Image 1 (cartoon, rainbow, N blue to C red):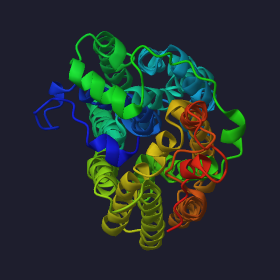
Image 2 (tube, rainbow, N blue to C red):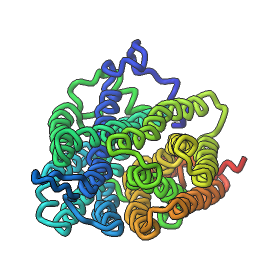
Image 3 (tube, rainbow, N blue to C red):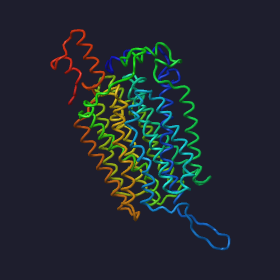
Image 4 (spheres, rainbow, N blue to C red):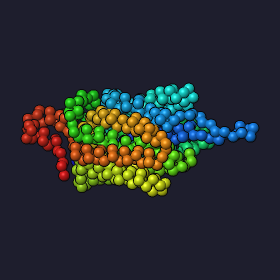
Length: 490
């Protein structure tokens, strides 16, 4: 069933969509939003806290002598390794997260991933005081648990998101990433200054633990087993997804088709490119603002949050606009994914180059903010694309793409640490030029090979082919197979 057909169905609820509490699927979205809020709050707090942990501060020793001290005397290279250590673990589990989510339920994996990360965040100050090796070990383990979160949420959408609402539901939930960044970055600076750097980890870790308890109680694996969903909404979701109530969710993934699909590798390249720029700024922006713009600790947290506030806001707009373009027939799904994604990448390339060239506080921060904000439109392209290609394998596809997209989180902070050893303007320009170049490469690859159509190797396509064959209908290359593989080259 395509997007236009599914949009003609009704969930039997007369309330407008903004009254999310009236619809169980949007309660899932609401809770997923706060889940991703925690994912990024727990991930980025170290980017701000490390400034307080390593800054030189004046100390009055009481005998007329004033000196300087640091909590941790780490070089820029060592800070790069500390900031990237999270991703050493994170890269290990996206594929596993997508695989086990199909078997056990994405909601359970999502909750465990965030819950374990929250507990480890609370233990971070203790680990840091034991030594940098222990801190890196804890951050690696945090990454292992957080690595499952993005793939398993696609397993949730494959059971809860009607095709006609897919872009907006995923985009609203993913906006939690940037809400978490917006809130945690400035508050981390405030907490570090007012209560000590340790408080940053205690407070956000506790919030994460509270969320897990609520998520576990109210969110179920699918509409089939949700005791609070109305029969009409359940029928609407299952019918729009082509699912039968009580049907088994165990699937045998088409590994050969996935591995040889250019559409899959196009979204992998796009995910990698977006994350390179995103992780570069996520881990390095507070340090950049302190080194080059000479901002104080509290101000770096607030200014660092501005780009993510814009991106979070744009995600609501981009998701709604993407769905509208499809529902009204203005663009095909392939065109929506391609135009949104590549248009964003081109804009990000330009603004990163201009911001780096000028390198003045006002213009540069404005360019960075626009570049990061445009990423919202890219997320309405590649980040939902997995569900277009093969809904039942979407979790595995996200696991594959997120594995490759984690490489920037490992490599970028280390490269940046080595490039910016002297903290000079020219060194930081190189960092931004590299990010712009990666965006441009991703744009070209995605434009050439992206698709928004159900792929012939997908489980759904094979099931439809089998049904056609059983009914004695034509299934050769001149018939139904060609209909399944609609590659719009407009």
